[in-house]
Image (cartoon, helix red, strand yellow):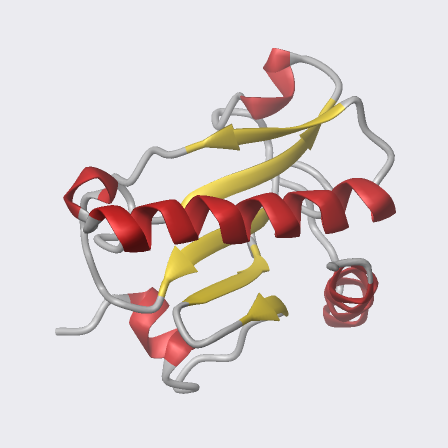
Length: 131
């Protein structure tokens, strides 16, 4: 059975996409810790990030770097935090989270709520700032 992320890649489930190429996709987390919290995934379904072949792994982080710069251009923050947990969805993914302190990346914190229009606006702004 395909992961929820593969279903997003295939267009079966909608997502607020911020960047996409032939190998990778970045989209807003629908349960964000911060405005602009983005997930970056390889289109190839691999469960564990360290099982990704080296060229694809390097490409994933290069893609994430571009996306992080786009987020930082739009969302006021000190840095873009990076974390890989990989327990909830069996598809490797990187969390890019605008932060002021390490506590901003505490996944036990309450998640933010945005309307569909707000999510769409955030995604559009970030997308427009990815070089």
